[in-house]
Length: 199
Image 1 (cartoon, rainbow, N blue to C red):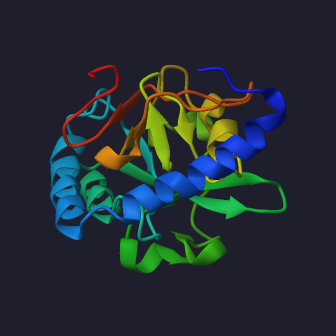
Image 2 (cartoon, one colour; image 1 turned 180 degrees about the vertical axis):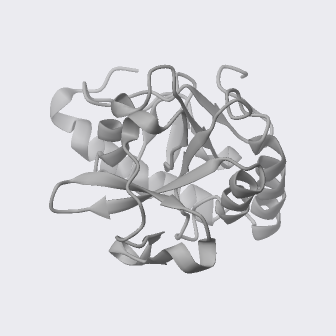
């Protein structure tokens, strides 16, 4: 779907409002069932089984899929869990190893739980599998984030062959999303009933 360059920012802002509303107006019981299905699907996502260093964002907003069960799964599988911390001054995500969810995560930017600054830093090139957040996703792997561009800058820095995935609610699927040259597609997106390319 073509988008005029001059209206790209406006298009994304409007879509953020639209998808935020779509998620939050989905009945709670429906979202709860989709959450449970996504938790079951998580361990089956391509590449996760052979990964050793896994980066997963920490959910904090009511419209987000709850990633806390996924964080616990990564630790239970014996993988190295890495979570992002926002460095607003440098406009980047700093990655830190997390061993204990209760001890190693504290309230950070916008109230989002993030690793304590004294946790060991993990360089992006050490990550071989990543779960990215987003408000909407299309069938080509493009995501609509919150506008900071943090993951678009992070994903190209991951280890060669690393995979970047997302899990989402059914209401977050889009036919096509506006994109800029710097927007980076994910390797896969999955929901309770769909997977990237399975329409």
